[in-house]
Image 1 (tube, helix red, strand yellow):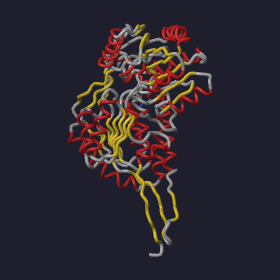
Image 2 (cartoon, protein in one colour):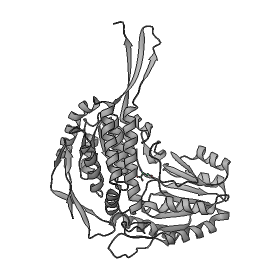
Image 3 (spheres, helix red, strand yellow):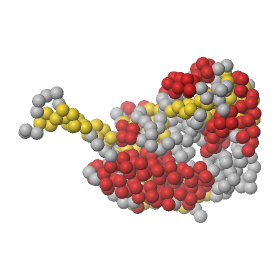
Image 4 (cartoon, helix red, strand yellow):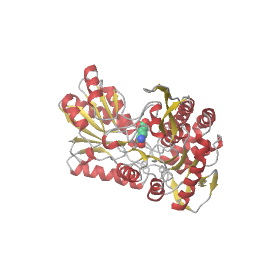
Length: 480
Ligand code: UN1
């Protein structure tokens, strides 16, 4: 059955000419739905609706905001199997991971429901007699939210939930590849009791919808997750418009394996970090930096583990690695593997796999004999591709790990407490993992990177309020 998705503007579902097909990457004959593509005028209507609704929502009580987010979280959890299947069908990650993502979205909604109740401020004695200083937080107003396809419900939730919890109105533009989960999330929130116009959903192309959001003087903040080139353009355009912006972009995340690591554990950490979600995570471990003395055994064990990871239809419960998201991404993955081989790397895996249905199946790939200057170690591939860099010891490993324009997540496998602590302190990434995968993070603590990976305040946890609220400092002389 093909669903026809509609924009949500000012509390009404607005039909428009279908322009974008939502195709199942495990079975390209399965067209899940069709979505419209907004022009600048439609985006303008959504922004105007959000602007009108923002004033009322900013005055809502913490309890009102709590109830909406809490109810939406309960509904997502109750429907996790149904929505997990839809997510797997639409995006292509294995159904167990897709279901876990729906649960994560529900947990995020519950966390930010609680945050709505925990808004506080400070009362500070003035240095001047008779005055009291109050520091409070207010919503920023209208927030434009632009999200990628790889976490089609978790990432929109971790932006929309804090925006709403702290009293903002939203115009949400999801990725073109994943309209179904965007619809489900917005529908659940709307039915949970949001007033009309507080949350608007606009489908369409980044070049049109994204640009209209960034350029609008009525949009007070832009929260973006996606590729580095698009993120840099958005940050520049937002700065020119003096609009607050937060951007989460790519990664080239290192995982160091020292000679004192437990190898079975290191292999598990690497297999999970590099290949789960088909490697399509900005936090994926794409550079495995391995001490020389354990290099060969690590590569042999990881290759064996990779051959056990079943590639197939995302809806098959046996599948560990689902398809790549679409034809363009598959071509990009294969191109990086060709370049890696041309530059002297030895590639195992990375082959097209035939299954009963026509899909974008690619076996996980490991590129050995690489050095950190090679293209595959400099640019984000965003597929089931990891490379191995052989190093002499910890000092070289640290230098190689930090030698990248990115800085999202970094990991180390070691049983040495001093090496682990040193790495936590000296890694140039925003998130550091010890004996744990670089990808797959908690929902209640700050998320975000350093250097070219991230711009602006971090997301998630209580830290998310740095972006979604602004601070007001009031001086009060109560004696009139
Ligand atoms: C995770 O690793 O759990 O787009 C989350 C991404 C990241 C989210 C990763 N922003 O892949």
